[in-house]
Length: 303
Image 1 (cartoon, rainbow, N blue to C red):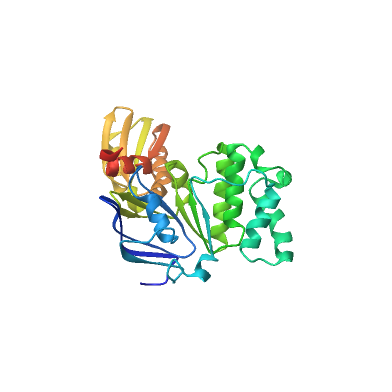
Image 2 (cartoon, rainbow, N blue to C red):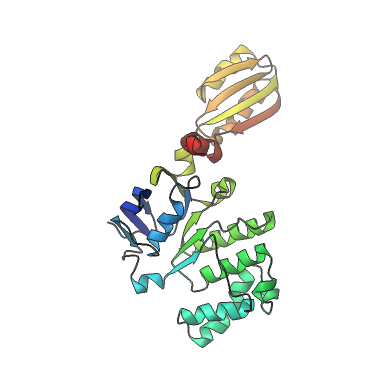
């Protein structure tokens, strides 16, 4: 297998009579944000555990950063925020991160510089001396994210990183993920918040019954075509016929038509054509199938 950030081939995990992961294959390029989606029970968490060497596969193989998942040097280059975690309530935020940095083997000077920097990145700069037992759920989520990125990893697994956060917190996490990508870090994102995935991820894989059933960019998955609803006065037959250079048209009423465009880049040209032709334009409403619509279509029988 090629040395991408994550490579899995025919991974299978069986617990007794239950097949949790069934011949799952996927490939994640270095430096991309990769969304991993599926309904509850689809095998997402088990797959992540296999890739992190927390459980061993029944069959199949995987490589993480070009090496087997259990390789100690590889593990030192990977960060992980699990969905369910428990941190020592008696430690302060600063003490907690210092403990993890010592476990990582970071030198003392590096720890002293890195811990306050990471606390600031996750919005906890003023909470370093607060004990974790006093943290809200959202603050606990933030400190979990802090420990995941503490060792400056090359690959980060984030399992529901925004589930406990308010809209501002989710936006801050998106910014952190984009910063990681800009630095060349690969982010493997498992989230049920499809709107977050839609604005964050470069590519997405959808898991069903323990196997990947669809993989691609959002345009590849949802289709790049755009339905453009046009509301205007003066939609003459000549104007409507001229719109067909950009795509198929269907007339909804005297004042409304729909054009199936090849992409959003055609919207300004359509508006210009109508205005120049004497139409009085009231509204242009472009839309494409959302990730949620596509997800429900693929896995709807499991929801």
